[in-house]
Length: 82
Image 1: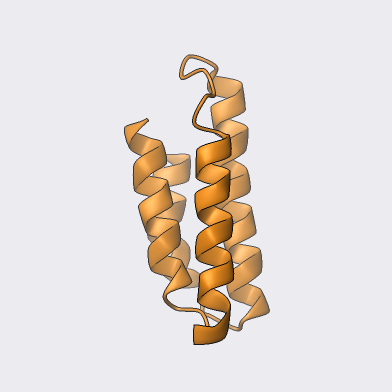
Image 2: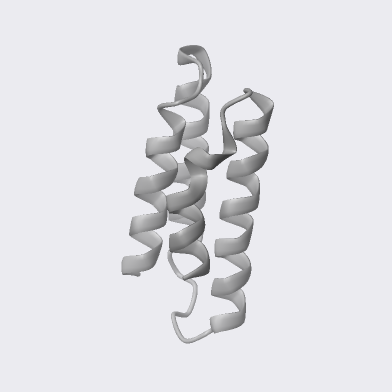
């Protein structure tokens, strides 16, 4: 759970780099996903790995969409893959 909270916090930090008019949407989207997946079994490493991989991949997609340097997601990459 600690890793998920760190990833969520980092996603919210990345949301702050987006244009002001899109921040609310992506912050809400991140929160909804965090809440929806909080019941995932912590011992199911395959599912957790997939969720963290999707978190990182989707974050890169959003950063690219708004022309934010993808290196901004290095810390998220570290959290999700480490």
